[in-house]
Length: 138
Image 1 (spheres, rainbow, N blue to C red):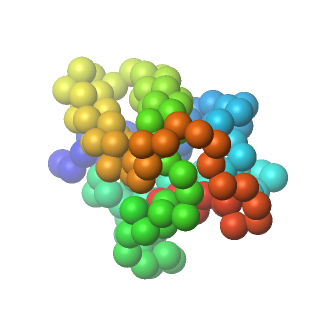
Image 2: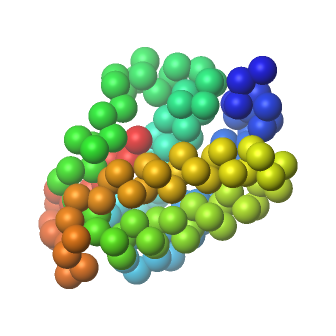
Image 3: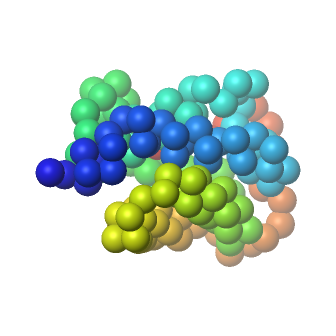
């Protein structure tokens, strides 16, 4: 059984991402990175990406092509402050799943490494603003 199935499949990943974006919605540092009034499109992209990564359906690639995570995030300032804020919301979301310790650690390890991989500046100053400052998440 792959990780996707072992943790409960699609409902688990939908809960993870819904919990994550509930935090993003009120975060003064991260919320401005998303152009959508409704975070629904970003929620769906991240859900599909994570489901595919962990062995679920390949819908993400079928709809969006190769993930190219760094390229998709390159237009946006992702420094230590953004990384840490992202990790805070993701930690709360992962903790909400009540996974067994081994699965919790496996999921968290990947998400933490991914967050560090996305850092593209060590500058903690304000990021770019304007119509192109819309984060297209995974």
